[in-house]
Amino acid sequence: MKNFYFILLALILTGCVKNFWWEPRTIITYDAEDTARGRFQFIYDEQGNKFTETGDFWDTGSGTWKRNYRISYSYDIYGIRTGALQEKRDHVTGKWIPHTRVVCEYRTDTGHLIKETHQTSRPDEGLWEDTFKDHYIRDEHNRLLYVVREKWNTGEVERDITLRGRFTLKARLTTSDVGWENFIRDSYLYDEEGTRLGGMVDSWNKTTREWDPVFQYTYTYDKKGNVISETEKKRDQKTGTWQEVGKYLYTYDEHNNAVESRYIPTDLDMQTEHFLFFYYNNMKSSVGYYLGDTGTFPGIRGTAEYFRIKR
Image (tube, rainbow, N blue to C red; front, side):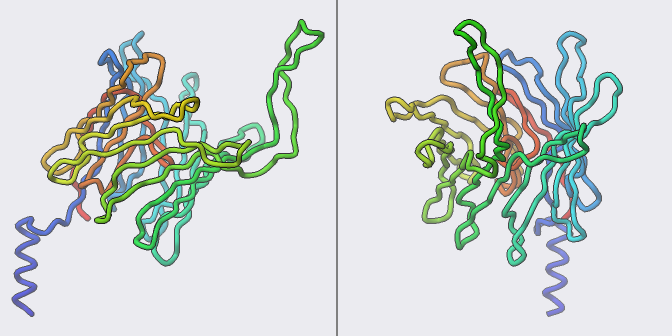
């Protein structure tokens, strides 16, 4: 037994046993003209937990980065994330103003995330107002099957009211429909070995009270098991057919971290805002435009830098 510990120690010292983890340090995104769009920087605490994320946007007029938001993450004594607070920068006073926050809830037996509640600040009233709830649903193998997003219906509806056929006014009406209602559903597909094949995005139809498919995407992997392309299709609601709208392409470093993410739309639409995300640590982690994530990275091309931390 003593020899076993000596061998294990030698493996650790020589780096044969992986006792480290990669985390993003900086992400920079670009628009269709390859002009800088956003810069996103991450700071971690001594345990390697993401502590803050800051987002800057490129000001073409001044030729400088302008601070836009800051996200602060909170954890319990066991290092489990309990929530996140996003603040916006007041460009006049330079102060940080609370904007939105996320509160996390986990299963006590497995520790998996089961719900995130998104809230928006109401500074005039000194309150936080519920806006979304994301429910994470897993199978018996703890594979993520669905992320169901509900939105809070305040019962208020904005409508255009025409008076005497000549004048149109914006009116806010109050209805009896107050409470949580289905909004968006992400579903994930796997093969028999548990490899994720892709997924779908559905929107809730309040009239039929059913989920209507909107997007679907499929993955292509390299020999190391990293997603190198992701084909996205959108459903034509009139014909019921699927039309390819774009493809994500990923480039990895020798540690299986995505150092470049690129979106290539089928028809280049300069008016549509696109968002990027990045996989790292052999796709055990991802960051970017996902339901439940607190940061978004606008652009059609982005590069990421990582650093290694001890675990």
